[in-house]
Image 1 (tube, one colour):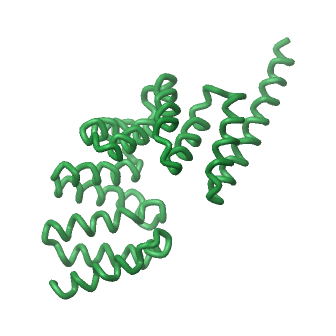
Image 2 (cartoon, rainbow, N blue to C red; image 1 turned 135 degrees about the vertical axis):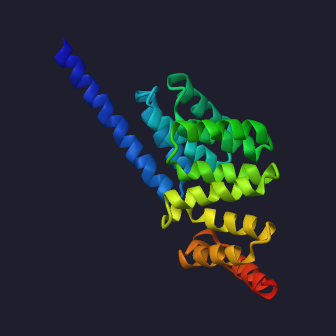
Image 3 (spheres, one colour; image 1 turned 90 degrees about the horizontal axis):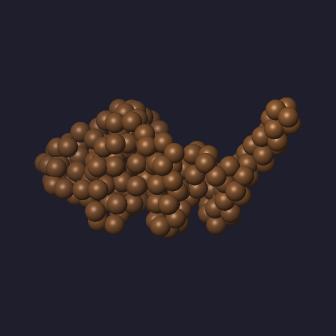
Length: 207
């Protein structure tokens, strides 16, 4: 009987992985509804699979569907209260909804449970800026960059730090950050090349 159960588990796991792989493919190609459908099929087979729920939550975030993203992330926390990525997602949602204190609490937990996650530091930098803590924001962006200095995943931390440095009067540092961002191809990836070039021109005139 145990052999039969193991075989069934392998079959179910294989089908779940099949749907998850297709979900990731759709996500990478920008077809978010198809990605949600595939991840949902995978979760019907493995409803308590935390990585699958986090992946579907990520797709919901890209769709701006915070209600369903939050449901997936909260389900993850019922299974593992130390799930750093679920806390990060919830913090991001709270920030987007203007609840900065709740956002800070969850992002702090994300960093506590996974102190080497650069996206969490970048998000906390945004929250600190919104709360008026410019020096804290710069420190967080710096830590995000330190953890992943050349990764396209965290290139936005350079523009975030550049903006915070400019507000704090560090024009040389701001210029360095904006130039680094463009050199990494961030402007082309995020569609803000000309905007950043204009900021650089303005800072050069002030510097």
